[in-house]
Image 1 (cartoon, rainbow, N blue to C red):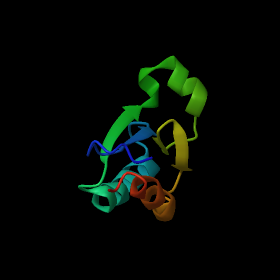
Image 2: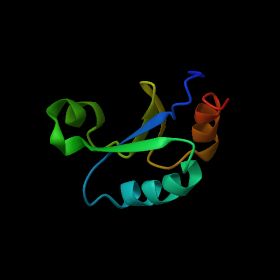
Image 3: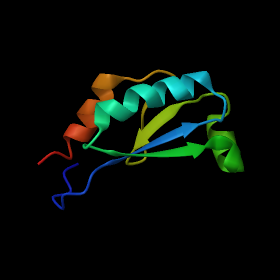
Length: 87
């Protein structure tokens, strides 16, 4: 989706405190999208509906309401998604 307004896509990462996979995914995701997307991290334990939706299935990366990857970073899927925002 190209918004045409110059705004960066927002990648939502649903994670959990103390989750090794979450820390690893974020460590790989941040340099991959630096300057091309914004990352918002949400702890699923902060809201019951997030706990119900994700449970042990973290980390999950979403954009525009669509799940892009879970557990491990899918670099190609993330890059493809944010490429739609490039002008």
